[in-house]
Image (tube, rainbow, N blue to C red; front, side, top):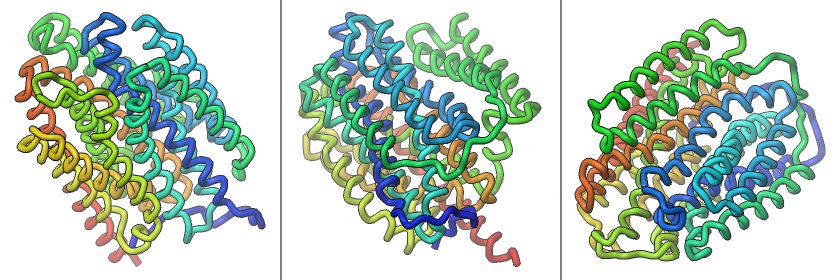
Length: 463
């Protein structure tokens, strides 16, 4: 049974905290929805914006990349100014970005809009921080599980939204803007900060360097196939990646209040969750993007529309929703690490199924059903696994780091897919895509299981 570290000091109140938790879960689902709604639209955007698939894939990658940087940065702002205010600010940026995207008729304008939308990724660790302050210790695992699982549900809902909009990307972004306004109003009325903001300063240098080396890395991966892996451009980007990453680590180790605490990435209590989260984020976006592209590609023989893609992915959404409803019961019966391990294994199985069985719609439905089960179970426990073995004052920091690495993993998916399809177009290329996702899911399961076992042994041995 998982043990979640919670602060012993809580403000007592006769007001139930669960309406606030539900409001935050709703907002978190929209944060996930705005990313996955773009996935089935990539072929549409390529056609309507008259650009290449590798160029238009940056509409997904840039949003995820922005989220990777914004997650620890806005988490710090939440500590400084109060999490509720920062959550509402992130939702406001999502509304502005969605309106811009709805009006966009060119790729540059759409990319700027997607950058603004990406800031909302920070909402998940911010919401976990609020829930930690609202719920008593015995209900904390359930609250975090609901947040994590509904985020997975929102990811599937984005695909359905794109399908129901019949591939009209303007309509998708206008609907996103409207739903976000509703979520912001609900959060404003129901959520209150119990932990006041404190002092401190943001690590802007760390945020800049993180952005530099991540952009260079993803650009090198995505363009390596077309430019040539030994070309001056790719080698230059790899050099920028290495220099930028080294400089970033050096800054983070010296600054008083770092964007990311290096020790939090590698300590025994969190490394299993860190690696599993990154690989599950990668596997999730790789399978979802792969299914969307494959089923719409003429070579697959399926020739799906965006609406049909939404239906193919509907089982994932339904399973994630059902599992989110029972997340609390699962968390009371099973350890977080065992749930993440099981989820990673099922996600890997879903991807492996697509390597060998992908010729009919039935094959796709089996895979997306397995994907939904794996993500529902794994995502429900990731937040708890990230924080259960850290001290109370490190809980929000651990949740933020876990969200960061999950987003970094997801942001690499588009670049890896572009590289694999450039090297091997057609059905065989997509088999490689799904094979890489299967390996990622399997390794995530191994890390979660091994480090979960090690941490339990340490906990038992500690008096």
